Amino acid sequence: MTRRVAILISGGGSNMVKLAESMTGDHPARPVLVLSNDPAAGGLAKAASMGIPTASVDHRPFKGDRAAFETALQAVLAEAAPDIVCLAGFMRILTPDFVGRWQGRMLNIHPSLLPKYKGLHTHQRALEAGDAEHGCTVHEVTPALDDGPILGQARVPVLPGDTPETLADRVLVQEHRLYPAVLRRYAAGDRTRIDLG
Image (cartoon, rainbow, N blue to C red):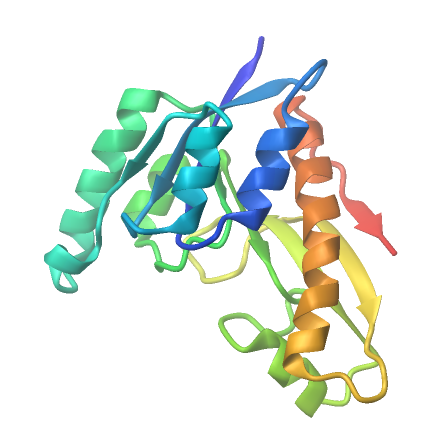
């Protein structure tokens, strides 16, 4: 049975593009929706050009009422009826109620080697800590921020002279490898952890 995947984005959608590009041929899933909290997100046009249905629910009119925003988000998701929801640069913190509805069916990619550096500014924090390596993590989403079972990690060395920007660029290359690899397994029912060098 082909799994239906909705991808949530907030910006340019580079991880979304890599996920969508991977879901072809014998892949056990297909993208059915790209949804953004920003109607101007660049990733929406990219998804549309790939023939994927798109939608947006602008968070700004809700003025901090997360429950109302998520009710609107859930209504759009319900129409698409996804089996799996992939957060790919979706920059809104989701409430436990919303996560609970999708728990066990929602993935996220985070730019650090969790459990290190939950939240923002991960590349800067890795540099400030003097870490020898950094990377990214795909995990199942739970109500706790950047928590949940780890499904895969990819590592990059921290190089002399690295800035948050140069480190972020190298980590992004690994994100584009890791997320599609994890999704393929996950959609097939395999939650075995993947580790990429």
